[in-house]
Image (tube, rainbow, N blue to C red):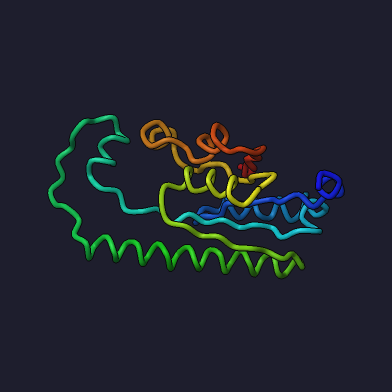
Length: 168
């Protein structure tokens, strides 16, 4: 099996989201890792973020408790989840079309939950050899409070991680 991987058929996974940086990372892979993906499927992964409850949001901000003027209802949560699912499917379709135009076969995976955890679990579960992410476009303040998906993956993924920086 190692000899097969030496020939260039490593399993590469690209993470797609609504940011341009993720599509830049996909294009970078298609332009620069042709031999690595030629003999295997390119895996495209999209996480569907779940609506946070108030206590989870407060914990991410470092507070034990924050009071909000309203609590989300089950219908509101379901509406957000359905919207996230539609957006994810649209993102996946766009990525599949880009790959098809380059003659690259893809396998798509989308799951709901915390993006960093989902990505690292998919790396393990699907035997990914290289994880490719676009750089986070969030501002420094958001990264300080909420964290960075790419930083989480750099520290927790069980394979090499490539973060493709979008030119300024």
